[in-house]
Image (cartoon, rainbow, N blue to C red):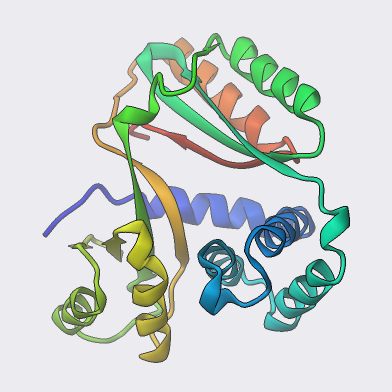
Length: 242
C-alpha cells in the first residue's frame, strides 16, 4: 500500500510549532474546553475530546497539562464561548484551501481569514466549494528514526486495529483510518509502545496540485503564513504538492 507522504512538511511544521509551543498549547487548551463542553470530560465517551487529546500528545503537551485543562473545562463549562467555523477558498494556481477556526469573535476571524486570502491573491469561496476534493481521515505518522521495529508487523497491527490503509515511505510510516476508528487504532499503537510524530483526524486531498510559477508559490505561501500566525486558526488543509 502506498500514499502521498507529507512527513517532511509535518516535521517542518512541528519544528515551527516547537518554537511557539506556548501558542500551540493555548490553541489546544481551547479545543479541550470546547470538546468538554460539547461532550463531557470522559474521553472514552467523548470522541472529539479523545481526538484532541491525541493531537495534544503528538504536539508534546504533558499529560498533567492535558488533565488540568480537562478538569478546568469541566468546572467552567458555562464560560466556554468559543465556536468552530470553517472557511473554504482558492489559492493561486487553482489550489484548494480549507481553514478550521475556533473563535469567540466570528467577525474578527472572518475578516482576518479573508484578508489572508486576499494578500496572497486567493479568494474565499462558499461552504462546500473545495471540501469535496478532500477526504476526512484519521492520520498517524511514525518516524522511522524513532521506531526500529518491523514495518510488516506494524502494518498488521494497524490493520488489525481498524486502519484502512498503510504506507511506507523513505523516512516514515503512515497509517490511515476512518475517522470513527482513529481513536481505537491510535490506542492500539500506543499500547504497543509505538511512538507517533503526528496523530490527528485531518482532511487529506484526493489529488495534489503542482505549482511551477514563482509568483503563485509566493502568493500561496503568504496565505498559509498569515493563517498560521492567526491565533483563531486551528488547522489549514490544502492540496499544494510542496
